[in-house]
Picture 1 (cartoon, one colour):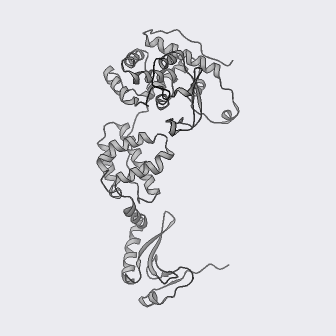
Picture 2: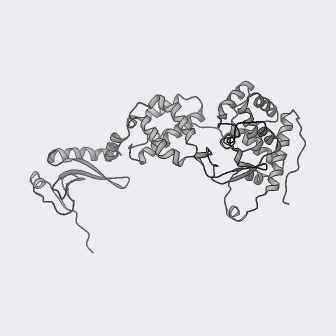
Picture 3: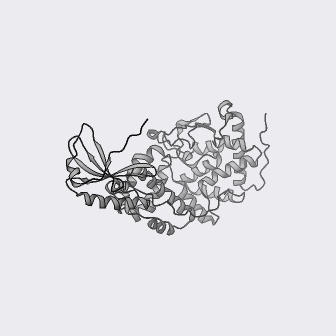
Length: 395
């Protein structure tokens, strides 16, 4: 079977005007300039196109109407554009970007509304980073004018390697979305090196627990939420969004799916989770009165209060998530094992066991939660050698 032969010839000014339209649009390729083609529409409209491949995908660049630009000028521009393609650029994408991206602030707003809110549960955290660290510097700039040098310059001025990496990641996510939407031709964050960081495995030491516990007692409502976080081991965002109607007979049910109308973010892995609230946590909740919705009133920002407490106590950096890690470490420390920790902290391990093991371990989980609370409270009250608890073995 013969292959179709491209409609190709050396264009002249005469052939450009004499080629006749047919029922469908068609192309005549110029054999003199690679990539240049004349397109004739059924209406008789003729235009010069540059057609090339970028990342193995065809790209069309509209050069201009054939009655507005001479063939010689079309060839010259096509040659210049093909040189840009050889250099690794995508002229068609760059043209779309110049037309559609707008300012960085406008692009960031579109990213949040069109993508982040719908796809990313933690979009508010990333949006906060963008507003605090990127918009002041780039907000008024045309998005397509921001370069890799601009990114490096901004990141180098941020104190703290972890925060700098978070800012870089947030910026890169935004630029990546913009390139996929063809608002930008390139992501200027590509090639910008992340800072080397040490993996944080911070847990509170036995001597720190009473210091933080006392500080939580003095911190008002945020301190009560931090106490509940330490004693339940759940994620900070889940604790601050805890609702009264999720608690029944001492059990807190965390729906897996987010519910924007009710202000519930959903669990990180999307799996509905059930946690026993030990007596000290129930006592904390009973002492609060913030209506029928959120246990701690409106959802709180716990990171700031933890930073304030840590600085006042003059101890190494500690975050709300470190309280969750302290709870999990206490589970294994008391001999209950990593499986119990993963189960209680809603770490999905995957595998066939997740499908077939439907036993909820309610009695065991309740016993673990109460034992951990007893241990941590003993430390908080200054008992440097709280009574040992025999962990659960296979029953």
